Image 1 (cartoon, one colour):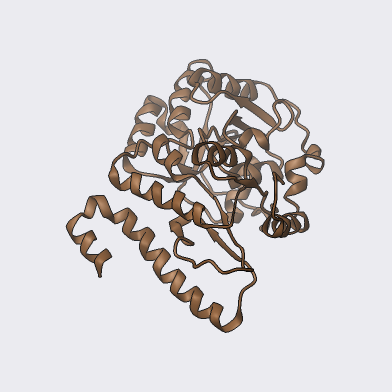
Image 2 (image 1 turned 60 degrees about the horizontal axis):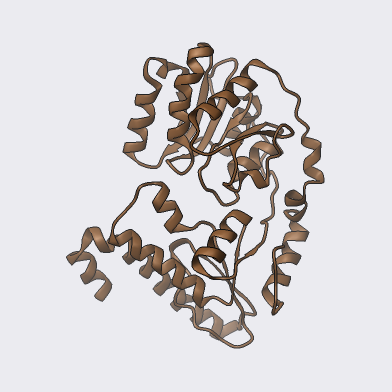
Length: 326
């Protein structure tokens, strides 16, 4: 009732935090009822929606929290400011403090939490695999040759930097084409990207969200996946591209550089550099560079992301009194 009243009185301020409290309240009630019936050995929650904020501590039942993102960093990069966003970030940090163990899927996010939140955060790579085969057919109307940008189009995903970099690309490669598969995070991002395309807008195909088999077919047909995130966790876009044998143009110091090896499975550039990103795109567009995806079998990140290894690491991280990066 109090939450409802606060939403009515302070809609702009409280709507985000209200959603977090709603998630935490209902999930904790449902969990504790079920826990009384069966007695769980482990609780694992995600930071998303502050799901584990109100889970009661119980001796012998560790609560492990997975940081799938870091909201204060996400909000900062997307330009979302105000007391409501600050309160949501605080609630997420409080959730992490209440957990017995905290881990992130990337070293980048783990470092952010350990150093800035002063919460010891381990690294646990999730299982990775391709669970759907690419469709034999791809959507009609796509260019013969193109690069792909897919997922959520947002500031933190480097979409705005990419849109501006394309202006430089077209100056030297007027035939360059892209396919963007996914959805824009907000109307402002959409308008800014389309404005940057300018007279070349027809050379960027916006497909919207695709079924996974169709998306995988488009990825496999692309010359490269351009995924220049400013900050990320363990993005499926990068994992899927690499596992499908498609080079990734990504960024340093964003978690992507933990998966992509420069000049081996893709190209890495500095964040927020339109020129560096344009140069990398042009280099791959002009030259059919040879990349070696067999190296993924030996890559430490992908080795740790094998399902049986990931499960073993989760149990170790959960039950060891002292733990470190996995």
